[in-house]
Image 1 (tube, rainbow, N blue to C red):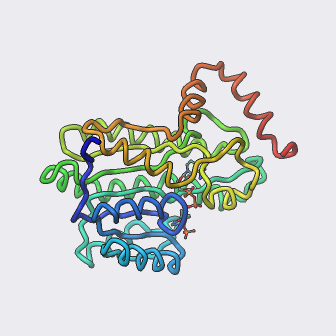
Image 2: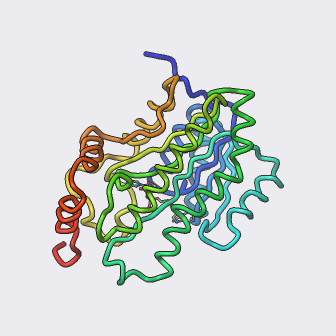
Length: 273
Ligand SMILES: NC(=O)c1ccc[n+]([C@@H]2O[C@H](COP(=O)([O-])OP(=O)(O)OC[C@H]3O[C@@H](n4cnc5c(N)ncnc54)[C@H](OP(=O)(O)O)[C@@H]3O)[C@@H](O)[C@H]2O)c1
């Protein structure tokens, strides 16, 4: 087997949304590779439980920072907290995110603002704040740090009744792919991970338990796809998890928009589900 090219051993990674789903699996894989962690999410008890598990299994140190990333000033607070603890972050996993399902006009306005605030605004602000440090670290120790942003197969086409979510994920994909180019030659790996339906708490948060069709992947499978991409000497700008997901995401761009929206809209109409 080829040697893993991404070697974050002895460095520190910050993961947002580390209390559940994909965030937990990112934490486990990074800790297994010898990375200390900063775990961020709102549910402190979950983060503390994970920190103990990682210390026992892998001997890594985890700093738990409970935080609502949609709260005003949250990213500034987080960055100040890192500075006060003298923590220098070499890998950033912008994973925290959620979706809302339903007619746009029926969604609570605060929920819509929080969705954009978490999926787009906090992700961008945190990346901007940590970017100089990520680049500086990567220049001295190439392939030991990364920026990993979690987009979605929802990024590849609009999705009626999840219009805000799909738009936020298109942003994440485009933003990350642009940064991939900007980081070229620095040693920093930049990757947008695009999962399809994955068995996490996502459906519950989106308030639609019947959101997915077919067989969802599990979080471990999805994370393995990200690390396979990171372990390539030349990490691609983005990767889609699952062959079927990749085929449908890529073919979405080939179907005329009106037909695509009609099919997706019919499938997703709330009254039919
Ligand atoms: N599951 C899927 O089918 C799927 C598919 C494609 C993409 N994704 C993306 O994958 C990422 C991870 O989602 P998941 O599937 O693992 O869902 P999940 O199990 O619901 O995890 C979401 C994480 O985000 C955190 N979070 C939510 N609101 C937050 C806030 N205001 N401040 C700080 N942290 C917050 C949650 O922690 P707290 O509640 O403790 O704050 C949790 O740790 C998301 O960006 C999602 O859009 C998921």
